[in-house]
Image (tube, rainbow, N blue to C red; front, side, top):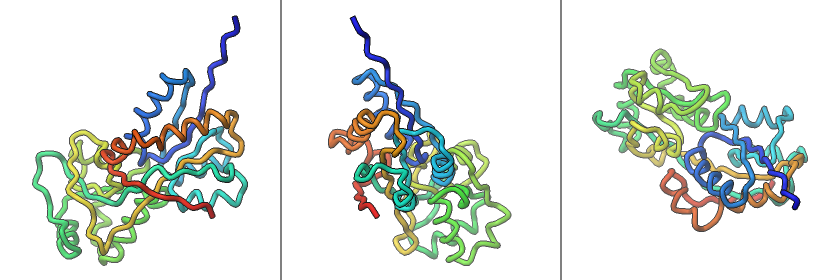
Length: 240
């Protein structure tokens, strides 16, 4: 009797999708018998690893990054599927007073009053770059520099939960994923920006059929509620 070889899929993924992705991957492994190894990181680092040749069957990054990868021939044409869109939010340690972010002026006052703020490193993170632009737009770059802690890996909310920062500004999906952190809300509309995360098959995938099955599992209608709970709304993606 022949025993089918276990397929091991390798996924390179932006950290923003970690919370909803992990249980879906677990269910996929139980259903198929395949194994999925996921490496999470900030999108800029994931892109660099992928371009440098790190083995991957599936890559999950923000839409602008995937648009940049498509002309290189590194992505299987037509394989990209939008997983969801998240926005930028503010979080504080659970049990502490909720700051006012109801308007641009209120958010600016909240930042000035905060003991320490944290957000993702703008050099490697889409959300971090967006937050940096917001701070510059508010004219607070110099005022906040001395009390800003940039996160090079993981979630900024972890620093808030530990008391090392009082406010985290990051993708909503990355705030609600951290125990001990409460989502205050999303940035005011005038400052808001959105990140759509997209999964696609690598042109160098060792297991294209299984990679496609995994992406199909991630976008199943039955999983929409899970993505919503994680801070995502349905998104769309059009190949470049």
